[in-house]
Length: 69
Image 1 (cartoon, rainbow, N blue to C red):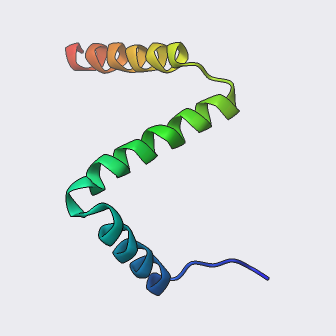
Image 2: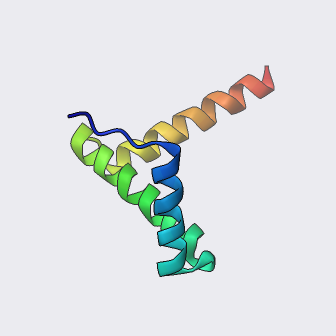
């Protein structure tokens, strides 16, 4: 049996989350979930935080060199 989430189910879940946590805490919860997902992906992918920083610095350097040209 496939497990599919439709728009109605998403709305119901969002309403329940708003009732439990309140509207003011939703951004905080969202950012925490995003950080947790990123950390999980990097752990599964074998990347460390240092690798992510190195990639970000390389992209910044590439962008800066593109602006100078």
